[in-house]
Image 1 (cartoon, one colour):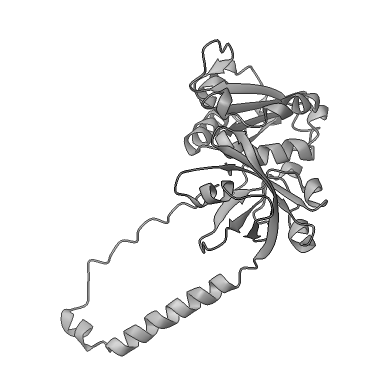
Image 2 (cartoon, rainbow, N blue to C red; image 1 turned 135 degrees about the horizontal axis):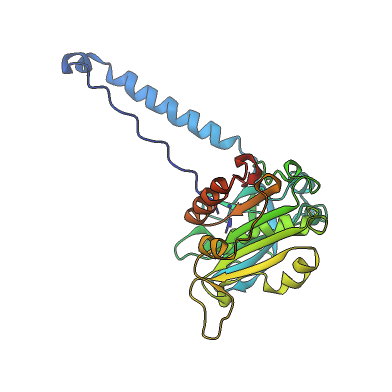
Length: 289
């Protein structure tokens, strides 16, 4: 999703059958057929890869957002079909940079309304040796390629404000990216009685979007910054998001509570466990993957 960039878990390894064919049978297999089968598999994989629709678009902004994080904006004024593919906060896409075939998955940080104006924005964490580092080193006017938006996004229609007045939002690091899209898209936060965002980062230098906090608060979102390694003088919540939530947690009705999560895997798992133990319905804990 950073993503924030999200990785797909590997499937478990299949167990080998204890009953293996004798070597005499294996020797009788035609090597040419095996070679042909491998070639066909390679061609089939290439065909599947080629079905991905890539759209070139220029960068219109690349600048620091926080320590190791960058604002990246893509101009979609000549790609209306790509812009219209983004319909729900939490969706993501694949992006690739010139001369590198392998793409990177990125959650879209800007709301769909901005896409309608021909813009995609991302919050990208620059990691040494990664595609993200190459992207963050590019300049205005450089061209990247993108797929259409994919994924179900955050299914906010599942938590109408009249039934779910309490919404607890959790994000860490670059995972704040699709959360920005959610908040700025408007999900009737002002019509809910209790909306909190627990936002974790190492310190304030690594916390993006601080310049947007005032507007987010005005929209009805109470922001709780949580710093795992705060600077001297920090008086707010410290440690990890899941621990801060447990400390700050007040009595709430689990039947009218929902949650939105994006970020570090351990945080998401532990917060989910706490919410489920409190009686929050699993289908009301929204994720974008």
